Length: 501
Image (cartoon, rainbow, N blue to C red; front, side, top):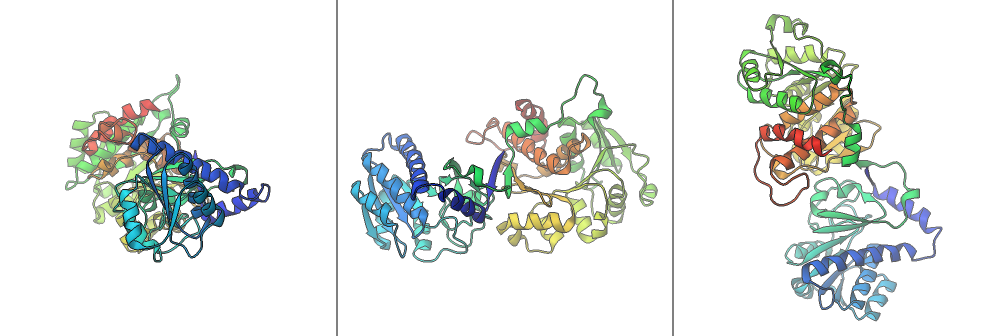
């Protein structure tokens, strides 16, 4: 499992480790790792380190020192290294090392900085480290914008300048890196958007912090973690032991969501899917997924909060395409009054946003909003949710008493008193209608199989993203070669994705 930490946690660990080591040891380790990564990048892009142009953007903090020492190492290998000194002070030892190695340093001048960046094969951003918060001040803000104009590789030192290392918040101009070389441990803000989008790929350099780190604030499941959590049938398994999931979704107006959520559950390995809705969605589900056991809901029974006609289930999925009228509200009340785990998505979220009393239940509840839906649940503007995703998903989990899966460019799973989990799979092609309905079916199947809400949501997000990559033609790894996909493609790709795990 990949774990991530706040700035305060990292600094505390650094202080504990530095107290046991000779002065300068940690900076030496960081600079050596940073230089090695940059040399590898230069060899790949330019064919060599010798003769390449490297520009260093140096601020007042220790990461400016890291960049200067790393620049000195590259200069000793024949790179032409020039530093822009933009801070009110400069790390003296690092500056002396750079000059001794043949590098050059210049006081900040916007015109000269633009010229240096224009000819640089690699730009090293050492302006602001993990202690930075809020919008960048000048001249850092101007330099961050100039970096965006360069055609060379951009490497951020520990964290891109302008990105809050603890939360991923970005307030104003910020460096957008191709690669961030981070030291000691992952910072939470490198894994959560908008910060993650500025960090690019992230490479960790071990400097020995491990024994001094506390419990993490953020975690990301790996393929091995997900493989260990996913249920596997044994020789004694039958459909009931594998998990029966009930799905209350779709309406005569919104029929596709029903087909997609049932497809997600069927393809994710549910032992049985019991689908309940009005007549038209039931007809379409029967035609597309004959495996599902379907029930046309009797409105008079639903209004009495009775779902006995559906049969026994071990978890429910509520909401995709359900509508938000009185009959839909009655279905929601009936489902949420049961004593089994319930996943609430889409129209179900609109219903509970209007009637919070629906969430007063003892059994586990999983909510799967996107930013707009979470804004209605919390009464917070959508743009605020997008800017502070980590903060708001934590708040939602605590305030609503549920496991909350916040969908988006980085999907987050929060449960009170647990590290927030960030999902690392997926593709931008997932941003299309209906893929969330497939996700709800996957998570519902895992809930019915016995996973906790926290694990079911985390594993569902991982598998969903993996299936999207497979469906888009790029394989399980993110990268080029992907093509547009439809939501049903994701459901159909689930067995192939699960096979890789």
